[in-house]
Image 1: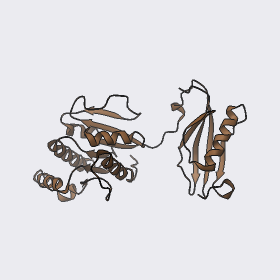
Image 2: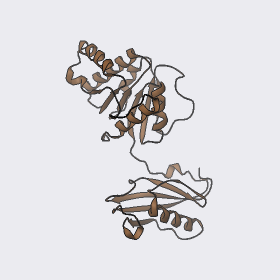
Image 3: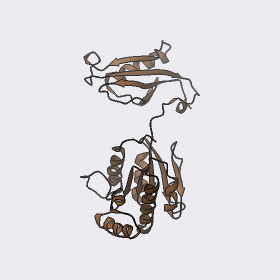
Image 4: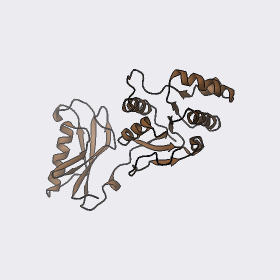
Length: 259
C-alpha cells in the first residue's frame, strides 16, 4: 500500500530507438522515486510534472516525448508516458503494468540454483523451482508468479512445468540430473513445448549422459535439444554468482514463447 500520495508514471508505448520498453514504470513521491522510465531529461521532466501534480497542480494523463535535441537526448525515438495518481493507502502493485514473464523451471536449489533465484527476482521471469530435499529452499516470501515444489524424484515434476518454459537442470545428484533430462526428452517427444533444456556440467558429463540416453532409446537428434555446458560463452569463473549471470543471460536471449 502507498504510504503517501504518489504519481505512477508508465511507458505507455514507444516508437523507434528509446531507453525503456512499454510497461516500464516509476512511482514519484514528493521526496523520492522508485523505478525508472529511462533516465535523462525524459525522466527529469516526468518527475517535475509528477511533483507539480502532487503539490496541487494539474496532471496530463499522457504526454508525448520526442527524444531529440529539444529534450537533450539523442535516441531519436518517441516515448508516450502515462501519469496516474495513487492515493495514500491505495495498492500501488495493483496499478502496475504486467510485463511479460518468461517461464523458467529450475531443478536444483544448491549453490548455483540459489544464486540464480536471487538474481532472477529482479528479472522478468516466472520461476518454478524444484528440489528433492525438503527444507532446501530459503525462507521468505516468493515474488508474484513464482512457485516452489519439493519433488522426490525431481523428474516427476517435469510434467507439471508450464508449456513454453526454459528449463535448467542442476540438482545435487548426477542421478537426479540424468533422470530429469530423460523426463524432459520424453516430454519433448510427446509435446515439443520446452524451448530450452539446459544441463549444468562439463563436456565429459554430457558425453556420459549421451551414451546412457542412447541406451534408453533417445536419438542423437533428440539429445541435440539439450544444452550442456550452459551459460553464454566466454564468461570465466566458477563462482555461483558468475555462473548464474552467464546462465540467465543465455535464458534472456531466448525468444519469448507465445504459449
